[in-house]
Length: 410
Ligand code: ATP
Ligand code: MG
Image (cartoon, rainbow, N blue to C red):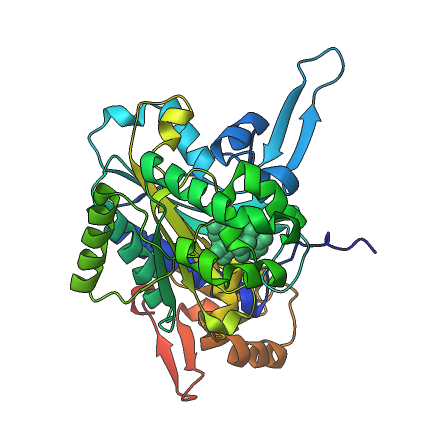
């Protein structure tokens, strides 16, 4: 038997009902907030992620599904299954010259992402993200708009007990000072840091703060290290931006906590970064991650454009949601005349009703049994009904049965 690949999953049965709810709620919440849907390709040039996600990230270093296509005599192109969607949306934004439209330009997406990770609860190799990207606004109002939209989606899914965590990474100027201070204070402990952090020390020292390794965590607890990590390092402009954001959130009645250790995995973030967590999820606790990436559009060849977005993990959302009972259909047609049943189903469906019928010409009693399991009403189409032109409608909740002569009355 051929089985699904490690780290991938079929979504069906009870679970697909939850997924449909997530997708439908996302559609409603994002449309109400005037985000337009975008669908970018599943694979892109590898170069896009090397530059757009950053080659000091775990994603680019260890997690990408990269392969070459084309034979020896054809153009060989290295392509990669998208590990996230921000780089793809930014590529599309630049390619279609969307920046000529007046800002803000707001997009949302829902789709599969691919990362070669060790599969465990809440962590797969093919997983799904639903997210938004907002371009063109440097003010903290955009940060608040994006965070508000994430919170609204979670609320509409009935997920209220979630924690919003915020941090500011600062801008080009203050971020570099912070990096230098972090390196300086950690240098004496370099040998004790884990291998990943040893590499991060040179390439991306802020990411060290995000490390889950116990030994590294212990080092962050040391007084002199703590002093640097928790010290005020962001410049006045960045501080103003952050204060403005928290005041917007206060006014919107959105609760948050500040977390200086929140640095996020991707290279391109500046100023605001945020995560939304649930303590019901165990060690894979983040359902949503996001942040501002003002330099990315320019870095990928577009005009300088401020931008901010988030991505939520659909599998993690789904695991937090309660089971959804399948809905009964409107009509189950009970008939031994398959053609008439089929024609009636066609007509009902065209009228927006959910309708089904027996395609195997089973006994009447069997069909009625099936109807009472799956439908609110049985629509009985026996010889009398067909010859005399009426429908016998049995309400399966009350067992009441009526003759209906006019299709429009169904
Ligand atoms: P983590 O720290 O859990 O690895 P991340 O920082 O790699 O998260 P992002 O790239 O910010 O995650 O992705 C946003 C969200 O997508 C995460 O908060 C999580 O809900 C989900 N996610 C990320 N990677 C996976 C995965 N391999 N399987 C399932 N969901 C994932
Ligand atoms: Mg990750």
